[in-house]
Image (cartoon, rainbow, N blue to C red; front, top):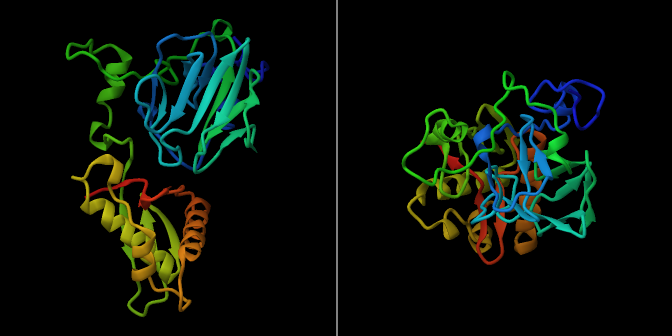
Length: 295
């Protein structure tokens, strides 16, 4: 059976061919269990992930990092808590960005307003991409030998079948999961004794930062690590006023605008180093790390 995207090559990874699967690749590496579907009234349409697994969509599907109820949860820092909506209306699917921090893309085009979605198009939420298909009945049989194709679901009952794929995937990397969907990552900070910035290593990937950039990351890492007991809504945030007061600025009168520019520069440096956007901003709360530092 042919890949439903290119219709030219056989399915080898789930329902996708190798070439189309590679088009979904990202410098941000995630595990299959970081994508979780909560579907109540599934339509025939679906999003296909990098493992070739179809996730069927409700007529109105919320995409985000924290989905309370129905929707598709993507537990990855580049995805906003409520990132986008996929909606079926009069037999037409549309996608709408919900003011996400890292944007929603349709075949690499940033979405500024609701747009129609066609079969085979690639949708990317933050750094995580999928293919949209309109009819799962037309999909080829998945290649179980190459990837698991079951949709990941949370366990609702204490009694489960150990052979059920959802149970297997829930068991994997349990120690890496948190209640807010943030990944656990390893952070190492290397600051030269003579000053002049520093090097931060995140899960083996390094990024060189200026002094102020390094101080920003160090403060957010320390704050998140020290507030694991705090409620999710306020955990790990650093206010702009703190950053203005505590960081080493190259101007006599740092302002909110200087903070925003600093955050943008650090975000670009992290993404360029293939670490990903690890900074979350929230109105009236400030900024925080989009990861839990590993102890």
